[in-house]
Length: 417
Picture 1 (tube, rainbow, N blue to C red):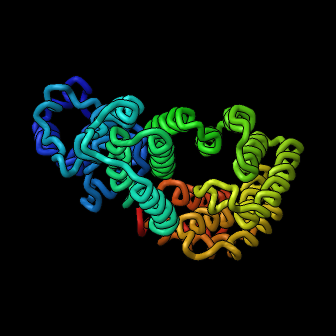
Picture 2: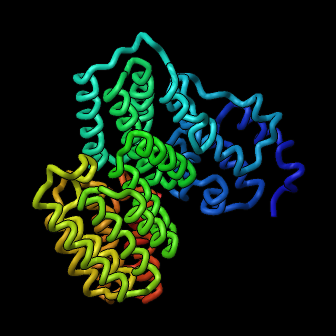
């Protein structure tokens, strides 16, 4: 198919595109020479097909070091061409002085936070209070605008926290490490949201180490629960269960809400494997924990602000979706969505896409297409790749059923592909 791999990089058009850093031209030329589809190229470089399309059409620039490195590795750019290609400027790097040349942190950030960085930085309670509030605002902003606009900002903010360690003493030093752990966990979540799996795992590991150093049982357990969530997203039910169970027993003293999160993640892992008995048992246990947690919200860590009865109803809907109990999935997802505030734009988009899938599974083709088509603009804007892929799954279900609404949804998706 196409050019011989040995001759591929001698092609002047492809070599010139790499040298100039024109990644759109690289993608177009590489696909022309190899015969690969956008989807297959995306699999090689760790991007979903719509992102490959955006880069080819010039609608998206490759400004991230980690994305550039995935492209270089995925298509096998020779070292000689890598050395002549246009590097990212300091301003374009994720964090000046803390660039990420690969998909994971490039240096041991734990060593950075536990060593003298700059003795001129002084730490006081007011500064850390301000950073706490800023992180909380960024978490809520991400619910509305998605993770992409915030990732670089949060890397820079983590650098600020790291640099404060040298001027911290006693309890303030512990608090700086705890704050670094919270930033790393948020960075991990944003990487996970963008399907940057290796980066997400690296940041979760870093967050977990910092949480243990700071004695923060809630964050240590949360990072394991979020890694369980990653396993669930990847269709690995048993790994999801094991990580969730580790979150339950490995960090004694966690809040009721954090325990509930780990328990429902274990339930979702069992549901993914079709084990309805274990799934429902653990969901009932998790609901009891969340009910008790709601009686004392002051005992919960700040990052658990979203964890309430509405969110839990949506989780029951997800479990029912895995168990192919379509009507239960529809009921739980509909109820949860009705109660979910509009500022949770990214989450509402995801659960609407799941509702469309459940409706399609139940044979409610017209309603499934209506929900899905209405979700397309938000999925394209803040729901890539997860919500976007779920809408494609819904379209595939409708097409397999021969529903006349299937081509309508496919056409709506193509407008944004």
